[in-house]
Length: 138
Image 1 (cartoon, helix red, strand yellow):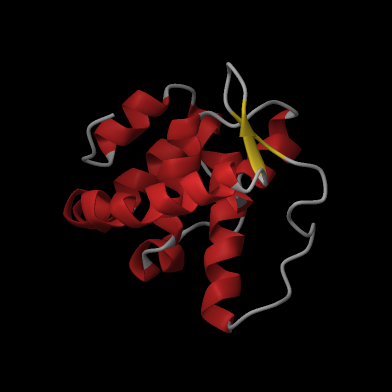
Image 2 (image 1 turned 90 degrees about the vertical axis):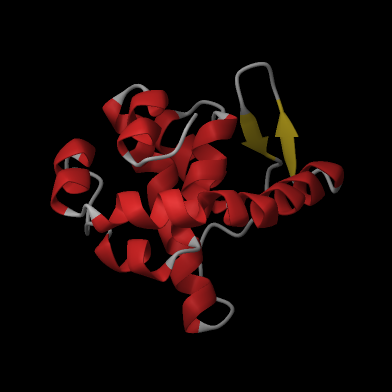
């Protein structure tokens, strides 16, 4: 849900489902979280080239982590914290606190990474191209 929140804040539009899922999968991986740039101004393609281990991590872990992310997304939809439009996912107003403060350090790091990735992943344009460069089939 933090990826959806980050995307909505940056683009004032619903978050495409592939962005929400990919951002969540990436945020759950410590090796990828540790390599994320400090700002969304960093070019995604250059970052992927400089951090080729991301391709390995994504190709190795994406399928298994997607099996964890999907039920979480389904729960968010069923509980109506997130709703689906024809163009993507949107948060129900006040469903998620604006600030990330509760939880363990790891939980906060995952939420911060997902929020940032929700803003950053679409910045390159085609998510299909980004996924292919990461070694994941769209």
